[in-house]
Image (cartoon, rainbow, N blue to C red; front, side):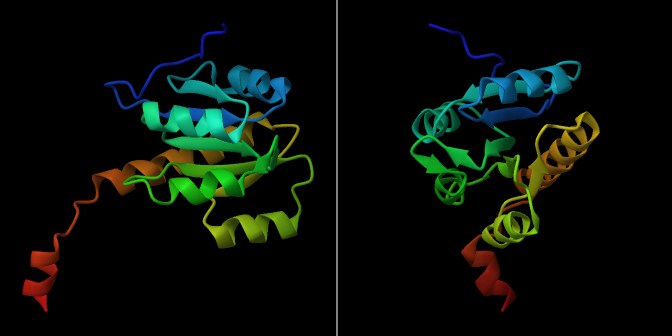
Length: 151
């Protein structure tokens, strides 16, 4: 059995990135791009195994191929919306056009990246998505009692 690369969110706050794609070359390219950083990369091949990884690890950013075996990026985005601190999801596709970009952002994805991956674009988008995720988890939750007292 192949060992998944990376570990859960490290104590130094390094980003944890989940690459979801049935295409082995996607994982290899992403590993080459982010391999020189302190980011940790996990790999998922389909919706169900990827959702299991998300339950086991504190993932900051997801890079998800538009079309998956038995599903799509939407099948990943919908369940994570209910997480206390949902990871930022970036849709990837060889056919990344304005229609996909508009649909992805409208549904709540962070960004859309065209393939083949451009190193600078991947690093920029993942870094910004990670900053967004960290801001979400650092926001203090406002309890209902505080909200009613403020009214």
